[in-house]
Amino acid sequence: MGGGTILVRRVNEGDISISTYVRLLTPELKQIHVADNTIRLGAGVTMATIAKTPALAFLAPVARSIGGPGVRSAATVGGNLFARSPHGDFGVALLVLDAVVCIEGPEGCNEVDLETFFKSRRQLARGSIVTAVRFRRPMPEDFRFVKISRVKPNGAAVLSIAALLSRTQGHVSAARIALGAMANTPVRAHNLEAALRETTLTPRDIERAVVSAAADTTPRLMRSPANGTGRQCFPFISAGCSRPEFLHLPRAA
Ligand SMILES: Cc1cc2nc3c(=O)[nH]c(=O)nc-3n(C[C@H](O)[C@H](O)[C@H](O)COP(=O)(O)OP(=O)(O)OC[C@H]3O[C@@H](n4cnc5c(N)ncnc54)[C@H](O)[C@@H]3O)c2cc1C
Image 1 (spheres, rainbow, N blue to C red):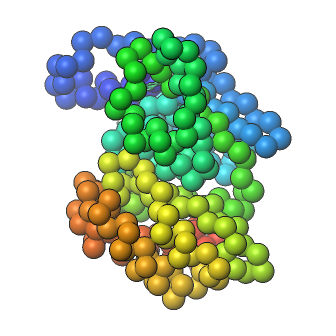
Image 2 (cartoon, rainbow, N blue to C red):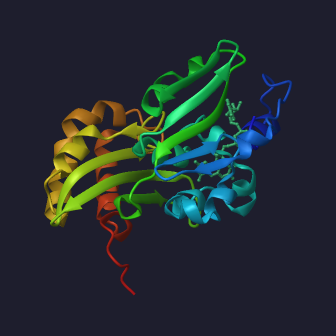
């Protein structure tokens, strides 16, 4: 386990399938490497550390959205990749950053992209652990994160949405979007991405994009434990995309 915020809670709630804890305390798992273009986070890096690391300032809002201070001081990057929906907010951000997951096991080291990891995380080989995640450093102005929750502050997500949006002369030239709390794991919103490209992110653009995303994303979104049906998800996606944090507009005073 990492910080145990999920695992220990399960035991406290009476899960008798867990009889032994194995805590990962290897110093390398706590390391953060920031090179020119690449960032590598050890699986044992906590949300509290991310929130206070200047080189990771663009990820601080994601880390700060997770639990309260006590949870953040224990909750790790590695553990977040295994969190069940509606949790897993950090994984949503990593998915949009096209992160690669480093896995070490009896067969040696292996690297998989995060989208593949989320599809197969239950089949992680016995004796294998996630050691780190690696991704390219984005242009800070391109990265956006919005979390909508019913309980303030720091409640579980009704929707979390991360995006990498580049604009050229006001138009969206590249878009990568990931949604949390909309399926069993964080998911890429490929249709929403396509529909937002070449737009100027006006309210009308966003409304249209959310609707055009419906046809392809509904079957997956309908499995959302947090939001029930896909139909109910769209107002949340629309609200998320209209937030100043998503549009990169100054907040109204
Ligand atoms: C009150 C409360 C509020 C919370 N709020 C949020 C929230 O808002 N958003 C959110 O995303 N999460 C939230 N969580 C869930 C949790 O705190 C985070 O998801 C956290 O990042 C999990 O990390 P951990 O290290 O504590 O996981 P652990 O409990 O240590 O582990 C979780 C699972 O992952 C496995 N695991 C952990 N590390 C590794 C590894 N390196 N390799 C292989 N397997 C591993 C463990 O075996 C276990 O099955 C909350 C939890 C609590 C108790």
